Image 1 (cartoon, rainbow, N blue to C red):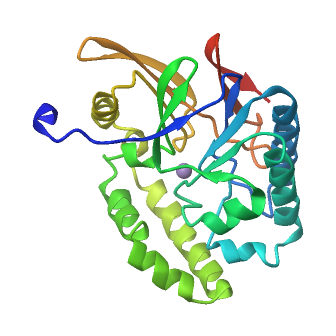
Image 2: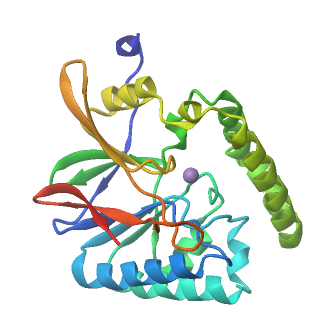
Length: 263
Ligand code: MN
């Protein structure tokens, strides 16, 4: 039973009183110019209207190490410059997703941004909000969770980062192709967040609101956990290059509550 376990401690982050904007799953890359332009507009607008911006994961479609910023391709140089400009005007928090989990302190420092812990209990004007990328809730996908455990192992990461940048980029391309194949043969509900795992996280954290991305199924779910009213807000992914209708948007947390904003 969960109640007999030692209570888990959560990293906490106190946020400003003003509006907080959250966006994830932009999957920026060389082949997403339209999505990138939408992201740049989002950052500009955030600098004028928001008090903080949180990007909980999969900002980049692939990230094989922070040394990629030493000699960035043009699209990346542009994205980094925009993030740096935003971070000079308001607090910018970067989270790690399943595609860009190798984002590290070097990138954060270069941008003047802050790294988010994988799971964080936000202290907002609306009370505690549990935030993460969301892949850790997809516990029905055993194969993915096995891969995640390996990929998140610090020693594995250290060895990977010791190899050359070009080799890592090639490895990432191959891993991506394999993952696309696995996705095609995995039933959709298996790849969604598990309600039991989400409920356990809400119990352990004491929060009644959880926010995550990853599943690309934007929604506001309302449900009960042990008779307590809980909410799960799922952030949309951004896709303005290869899909019609175009997708994207973000979540606002302010005194009035939580709500989605479209592009
Ligand atoms: Mn993801």
